[in-house]
Length: 373
Ligand SMILES: Nc1ncnc2c1ncn2[C@@H]1O[C@H](COP(=O)(O)OP(=O)(O)OP(=O)(O)O)[C@@H](O)[C@H]1O
Ligand SMILES: [Mg+2]
Image 1 (tube, rainbow, N blue to C red):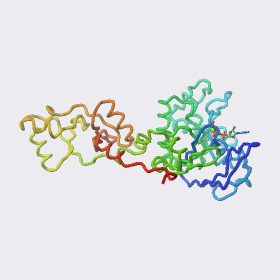
Image 2 (tube, rainbow, N blue to C red):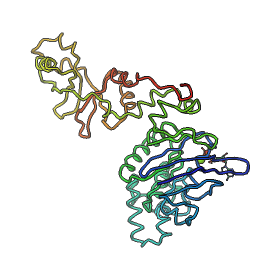
Image 3 (cartoon, rainbow, N blue to C red):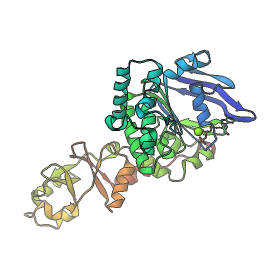
Image 4 (cartoon, protein in one colour):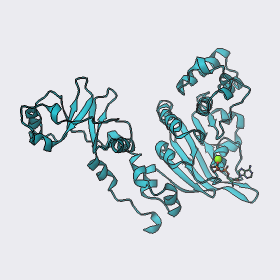
């Protein structure tokens, strides 16, 4: 979809981008990351010809973009920039419809698209359409920035720290919503950030830059497990084990062979389940939600005619199956629990994460960097 071949950009004596080669496939989510001034924005701006390379070439769908009309080119490339860049004297609706208006879409179609996009980024169209950027919070403005970039449904999106200005909580909400959005719209995305956690969350591949060069371009897992050199390892940070947990979905790691009982089942019935080979029993309420967990040891200490409710290690927490292991661990630590139930979208238990399962996952040794081998 996008191919950079030996691309260099020189500003006077500064090589902002130095011999970059990159091949981004259709539907791929590529994250560019690196320290301030390493050339991320410059790389991105060359893709939509806001900047032309000093050497090398860039192809989009196989065509050299230096031969293309920049305006025409930008119509197939949505661009959300670092400072949001909404025009202060225009309403939110006019800001979003900027490109559709240039393309002379009929008024009605423009309006429909604005409404659709506002809903898509989680803003109520009627409330926000006629407001001005200064009347919105930073987070709301960034949503509008994303909506505007999506306006003409471009196959390619360039996003330069689109969530940079947000507080950590809003940022995480926006990230989660954006992941859902991307699942629906499936664009080819080049996304700039300097936040490694954000990179690992989104990326199919992460390209780590330093001094204008790409140091390593790999899947998040490979970046964590096999950093190309000391720079990458230092950049990833020492908490790579935790970061690894943030890459694994609960549903991929959970223990799925669980049995369930109700609080008014008897101890005898629980014992029977264990005897038949069950190793994990989750206690569920009549509504189907997980409410507790049974320990095998407790079971043997209790008379058979008593009830499950009496030995239930109460208040098991639950985590949704599409969350990450890091989310699961956070809840476990908060509740000082060695296990957590995993629920599906109907809040029914579908699995279990235990501390020993987590240990097993992180104990796989990390590979040394290539340099050290
Ligand atoms: N128009 C310009 N003229 C001269 N130098 C420039 C210009 N634009 C960028 N540079 C220089 O090129 C280098 C790369 O800049 P760029 O904006 O691409 O960095 P970045 O990785 O996006 O940084 P940040 O994380 O701070 O946004 C920097 O040293 C910068 O000072
Ligand atoms: Mg930048």
